[in-house]
Image 1 (cartoon, rainbow, N blue to C red):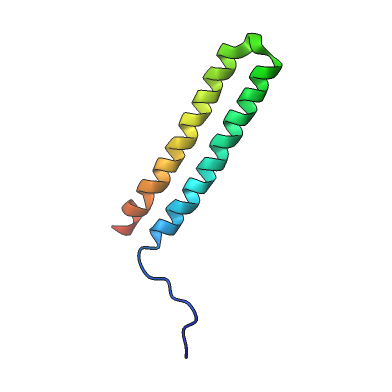
Image 2 (cartoon, rainbow, N blue to C red; image 1 turned 60 degrees about the horizontal axis):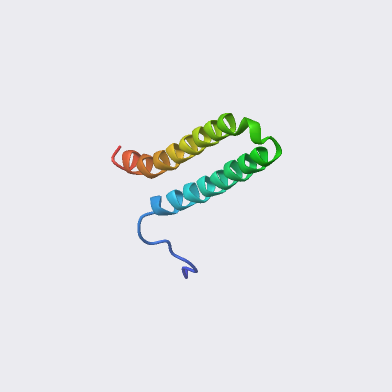
Length: 76
């Protein structure tokens, strides 16, 4: 039987690539919506900025978990 395609290398790199794409989309949505909210209500700048940065931190934490998790599960 002929092999049409073969995956070689570490498959976890594909999983991390997908996790980074998701985090990038999430960061874009958070900052885009945050800037739109600031433009609509400039007097709420401090609160919106605080929530925007909190969302950014949580999204980036998920991306880092996506980086570390495959290495942890590969050793089990």
